[in-house]
Each structure stands twice: as structure tokens, then as C-alpha cells.
Image (cartoon, rainbow, N blue to C red; front, top):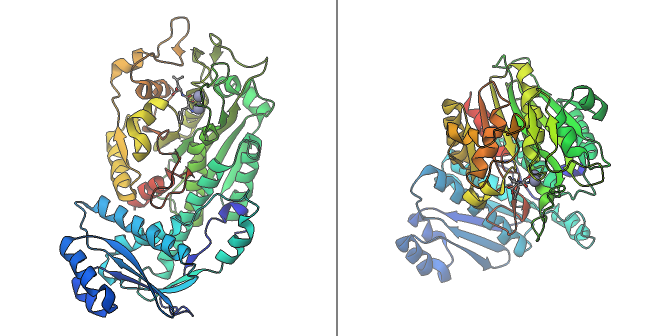
Length: 486
Ligand code: BES
Ligand code: ZN
Ligand code: ZN
């Protein structure tokens, strides 16, 4: 794949069975019995580690470097166990990078089960991501790193599985890149152009409704948010409809595509505007998911909808107290221009009705209130379909993109009822994440789930296999949900 947006993967896991040229070894010890093969200096230390159930990574310097990982901690459930394997994959990669090992054999993974092997390889590949495209000095070293190769001498993953995993990691990488690109490099129009390019390369349909069409359709939510901008909005429709699709009615993913959120006239002050280039993380996850679905030829009819615009100020911009008419005719009093995500999503959710979808899931960096509840550790979920919500929960545990249900009581809906219009776009001082969800619910008439990813979409510090910046959250979750449907 030619586009630079797939360049996050510099070192690759080669296919099982191939031998690396170099003799560097990565040895994974999962059983006390393997200790006898160790260099003498380590034997006693590692034995004690097994007794105390302590994990660790050692580097042994000889003619070639050996990296030895002791893995004996048992986590209390499968979800934690898989996450530990991902983090281990990341630690091994980082050690290789530190030691500048470019080629190595990986041995000893037989003790892991299939799912753990997958998770290990996933962590290893995901941890290679760095957003350094704008660092001049990085360009040279990047070239060198591209030669890196870790060969598996165990049957870690089959060629087919590795191909599958690569598609998943590439989709996450794409999603991270879209979030990390600053607004002056990626506005709504540029996002649509990128989507068109990717759709062509990977093989799914990309239709972009431009401003004139959005006006004809009277998508008042999108137009109200866009009013202050010199860059027109776009409404992006991605379609993956394979002949062998198992579902007649589409599964629709809707992503918030606010390319930058200044807050509008309810301006973000005191530093909270920082990181708001991440406000299209939902849209990025939807594009990433469609990309992987097409690359993997998943047998599902899937549609992605991404309303895209920035939220900026000019003399034209929407002001507080403005009353707008949404795509479905609902009137909304804009009491806060910073609650813009729900306005653009509402139009997309109304638009989704025409497809008579089997399920709609929206993903959005929607509220600080959700971020305050979940932190970077998980996703806040609401919805009207307990059965699907349970499936999302299961997928969340499996991928460690965990979801927590928030209150979604009927009374919370009363808090967004308008005094002078049908709805108002803020709900008051309590339950901010839930009232945002209730606002969206008004525009749905199908099985629907709302995922507020404001907490985990963008992180400030490196954590395990996650680099600072966009995390690509949602992509692995949605792909896992689709796999469960098999
Ligand atoms: N994009 C923000 C939410 C956000 C906050 C995302 C922190 C990521 C990290 C959203 O548009 C917003 O500003 N929401 C307001 C809503 C409020 C005015 C009702 C918020 O959460 O403060
Ligand atoms: Zn906002
Ligand atoms: Zn926003």
C-alpha cells in the first residue's frame, strides 16, 4: 500500500518458519523447566523469579544479543492475560529497539495459546508506531529501522493470521495518523480526499456529499457547526457491501468528525483547547474499521458515516441562543457552541434511518464528562439494545478496549428538552455524558449504541503498546465485534 498513512509499521514479524540471518535470539520462558537452557549467570535469578511469580526481561550480550523474557505471572482472567501478552510484545519490541537489534529469532512461544500469540504479536506490532513524520532528524533513522526483521522460529501465527493481524494493525495505524495530523494538514476536505484515496486502494466505496448537497439536504446541525469556518463541511459515506454479506440490512458505524474543536463562541479557554485536533477520533476509527473490513473481505454489509467539519469562529459563526433546524426537522436551541459533536452526529443518525439498519454504533469524543468517568482506561457506552451492548462488552474485554455502561434513564432525556425549541444542546450540571447520549437518542429509530471515546482517544504519555497521541481506539473493538458475528 503506497500511502504514507500506512507507514507506521517499520519492523515486521516475518512468516513462521523463516530463519533470520542473524543469530540474535529472543527467548520467551514460560515454564520453569526451560531454565536449564539459560546462561549460568542467570539461572539462579530466573529460578527465583519463577518461584516468586515475577516477570522480567534481560539482555545477554555475547557475539550476538539474546533477549530473555521470563513470563510466569498468571492474571485472574482471560482479558487481563491477553493484555499482558500485548504489553509483553511491546516490551520486547522496545528492548530490540534499544539494543538496535535488527534481526532476531523468536523462540519459546509454544507455551502460549493461540489467542495469546495473537495478542503478543499485536502488541509487538502496535508498539512500533511513532508519529514522527514532521521530525527532520528522524527521517534517516527511520529508513534504517525499516530493515528490521524479527523471524519466528515457532509457529506463532499462520501466514493467513499474520496477514489478518497486519490489516488490523494498519487500520489502527491509519486511525492514529488521522488523529495525530494537525488541523492545518487535515481539514474536512482533506479528510475526504484521503478517504477517497484509501477507498480506491483498498476497495470500498467512498461517497462525499459536499457543502451544496448538505445545504440541499438541510443538514442544519452540520451547517450550524460549520458556519464559522472558511473550510466547507463534508459528509462522508463509506460502503463495504460484499456479495457474500451475511446481513441484508447494513451495520452502520457513525463517527464524529470535528477536525478541530475551538469550542466556537463558547470558546475553550485555559488550555483545554489543547489536544482538540483529536476531535475526529470517532471518524478516524470508522474509516480505519472500514479499511480493515474491506482489506479482510469481511462478509458483512457495513456502512460508515462521518460528518466532518471544524468548529471555529468568524462573524458568521453560530452564537449562543441560536435556534437551528436539524436534518429531520427537529429544532434545537444552541445553548453552548462547544456541544457541537451532538449537532453533527444527530444529522448523521437521522440520515442512517433510510438504510433500515440492523445496528448503528456511533463513536465520538463527545464529552469531558465521559472522560472524567473512564479516564484513558475505557469507553463510556449507552444505547437501546441490551443484546448488542452485551456483545460490545465481550469484544471490549477481548481487545482491552473496554466499555462501561453509563446511566441512561428516561428522566435524563428530560434534561435536554427545550424551553423555546424541541431540544437544547446541553443538559445542565449533572450526568453530562448521559444527557449528550439522550440528545442523540432523539434522532434514532433503530438498534443503536453510543460510544463516548473522549477518555481513551488521545493520551499524553506512552503506555505499553500505546504511543502518546491518538490511540486508534474503537478500531479493534468494532472489528472484534464483527468477528464475533461469524
Ligand atoms: N470535543 C469535546 C469533548 C472532549 C473533551 C473530547 C475532552 C476529548 C477530551 C466536546 O465537543 C465538548 O466540548 N463537550 C463539552 C460539552 C458541554 C459544553 C456540554 C464538554 O464536555 O465540556
Ligand atoms: Zn466542543
Ligand atoms: Zn468536540
